[in-house]
Picture 1 (cartoon, rainbow, N blue to C red):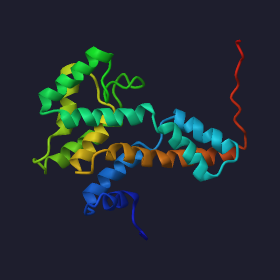
Picture 2 (picture 1 turned 90 degrees about the vertical axis):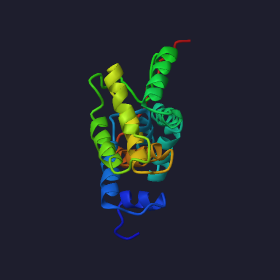
Picture 3 (picture 1 turned 180 degrees about the horizontal axis):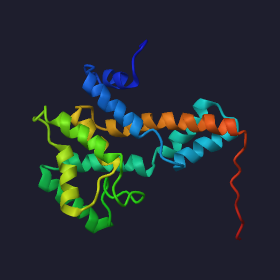
Length: 209
């Protein structure tokens, strides 16, 4: 709609009444997650842009790579764990089970941020503030924070955004969708930057037989 922000549109698309606090929270998530160096999706969008592909086709390349990316899988896995957890202790137990079985836990200990994902803290702060006014829903932000206190593993943006979407009463799987929508802004910026460079990217390979 004319003059409508993306954050307000997300609320309307989810059949929710627009509210300034909800819009600010969603907009914060959109800004924090807009770009992250040269991920596989970004490499794909830059390759497409360097070949002269149209903007929709460049974004299609990024979304194709994103369809089964680590981030997309993490959003689904952390939400499934939270949905099936009966309480904070049960969630911690599920995380510990994941650590024992696979050596890792979805939504915790990002390998690029050994000291903690800087995007997670502001998202969790928002989730805690919003949840304080809605005691009828499980405190997913509290669940995530408790894991960090018990295990020392800092949460990632995926866990924090999932908790925020839950606090906002958005539909399930909204976190992954908001992430993709947010990252689209970054992909568009990479398309523009690549076109301005005027260079075709040609990855090199060495045949080893």
